[in-house]
Figure 1 (cartoon, helix red, strand yellow):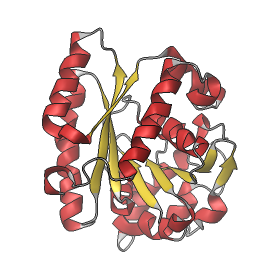
Figure 2 (cartoon, rainbow, N blue to C red):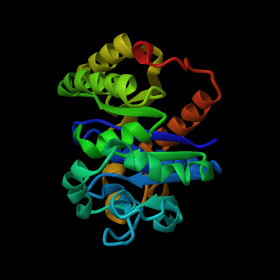
Figure 3 (spheres, rainbow, N blue to C red):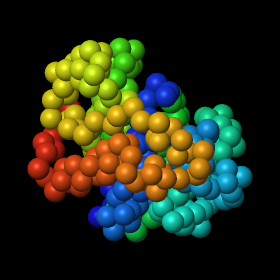
Length: 262
């Protein structure tokens, strides 16, 4: 049975798209069937997998024009992708007048969910209608957390939003886990952020930390996941390790109960 996972953080620059691209590819290398749905108008996951942002049909067509995700999916050497570009910004306005507008993406992905082991949704860096669609479509939420003080502040709003969606719109929604990104064990700040995150979220925090790594920054300009760009880099090794930990979690070795009773 396929599982849909929304990768969400309303703060930009926290490694959300980097996590989408590299975790998806790492699982693809493990023989898993993975679909990455780019639901961010910036289209960074699209270019990060080497796909032209002008590719059509795309996620906008799936959401607004009833296009089949199966027809819109692009097959790359890094896995399957539903591409996106700035056109998706228009959906924010157009969806307002649509009946059951929160569930449009869920209905669309339902047609292909069972064709994949995992469907990852790269959400915009904000808590708006596209993100809400992703949360309603998802079975769980994975949150990349940058190891900086202000990253902690935004988590309160995110947790509140997920709890509200769980209560009113998607009673099956749970937290998959929290991934610490841009981690540097040499700095006191990283260690303090790690301690605070583990204090509140405990077992839901992945043991794998994603380090600050220049290769992670370089890879997108080459249209490749860092694992394909430089497999020996610290960033590559971290995401491969995260994929292993993720798969272990799917086997039930981590606590399955949602955060705060979700």
